[in-house]
Image 1: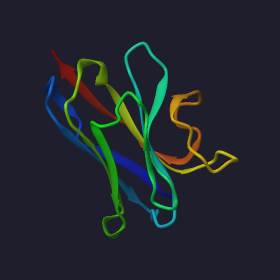
Image 2 (image 1 turned 90 degrees about the horizontal axis):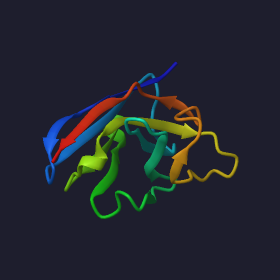
Image 3 (image 1 turned 135 degrees about the vertical axis):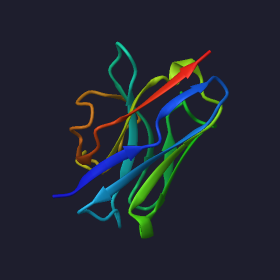
Image 4 (image 1 turned 90 degrees about the vertical axis):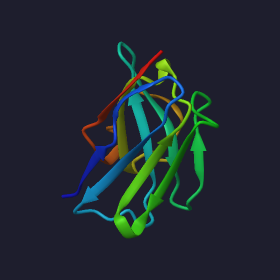
Length: 131
């Protein structure tokens, strides 16, 4: 059974950048949709960036223009480039792949089941942004 592992989290000052990676073992991303979601302290989960199985990308309003999702199938890895980070971006970041929404569309915003919507998901990586 495949699993996902997130890396790249850390502590940065506001305005800084980080790149998160999500690497899989035992699973290939080809033709699979995937997404990045986060859980901020005291909050529920939020789906912030997605890649559909046709390669199209979407972003929540909270990160649009600052974050970029991408993937490298040859490395079985997908990424979240985060620029101009803000203190409100402080959260545990998770990756998920092969979503189970009946519509085939990953809905940006609140993620009620916080990852159970994906067949594959990681354990999370902490991102802390100080002002």
